Image (cartoon, rainbow, N blue to C red; front, top):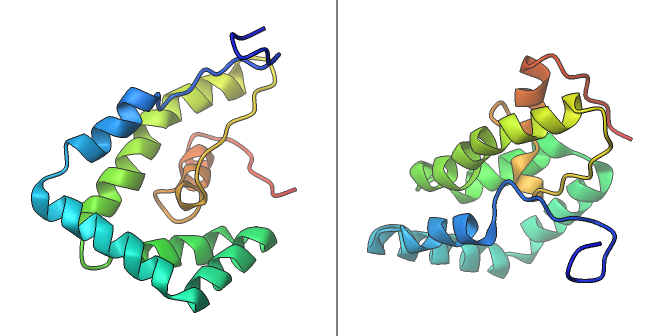
Length: 132
């Protein structure tokens, strides 16, 4: 049992320190861009509703497109926030899949779809991916 009293152990590939390092290491320009992206996305209720609907349908490609559109003026941020982290997580997720035990892996919806998303990366490693 973990310290929290849960029978589940947290064995994150992106520990809090690593997650926070992403934000700490941003330049002033990148920090301002990220805030703009987040606030502009939050202010547009229409796309947000579409993203929720896409998530509920399991439409990872719509989620991927919406995410990339929000980062269109700052593609380096998308690479750093999504693509690099996906690559960093991939060996750990792959080891879980090949380890013979059952694991529950949680990632944000933006990490799933597209050619650099976790589903595509796992498929290139020979994993069979099916939506439930």
